[in-house]
Image (cartoon, rainbow, N blue to C red):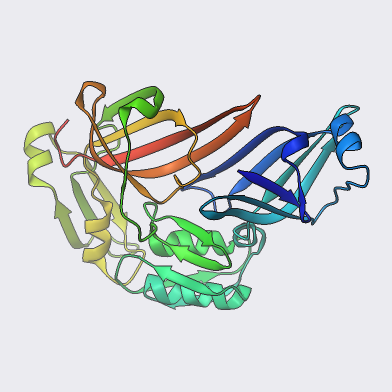
Length: 300
């Protein structure tokens, strides 16, 4: 693992490093602490300024590329925070009408920001999103693609959905700590979509297995797109398993990817989506913390 600031390798003066990203965030965040006394000895000409380029890389390639957004100084250290290009999605409010499929809207948002569009894995259906003030590019994308899709930057390109890579098999020997929760707290097994401003049903969907097993958990929503049935289907939520793992550090584990686990004694079995990740290096110890999620289809 190598950290570069404006082309200068900082490993020798690095006190602490964190690289994190979650599904609910548009940008990956890198925070680092540089020991200034050591920097004076190793790099007398080392400077740190807002906007400086930051790169984190390992043998597999570049893991983070962004710019310094904040600098904090003490007598002994300099700490900085950098974000990747996903920051532009939350720092730019867009106005106007965005319409079409989720992929169409993603292309329109990317064009407005001058960002190339990469792969898009998004629900079908036609949407019309009207914005005037206060809606960021990320808000518009989130409304178009729903809460379950990853929104991220792959280098210079905007990506919607998970990475098109094979799931990573996790060995139990690498796990340092684990916590697993199975829950039906957010279950929705019947959904009704109503005509705007009325009580007239336009479409409905239900999960018969979950209805019989747990009783009815219903949501009724006003039509927010142009496909009532697609909206009803998307509103259904089954039983879910979430987990938090801390394991030996691995920069290849990124938000939006999938992992496979076989540890039934921990409540973990099958394929999980990574919904959050934090890589941390401190005092010579490199760890990776994962937030995982999997819908169980009614089986806890």
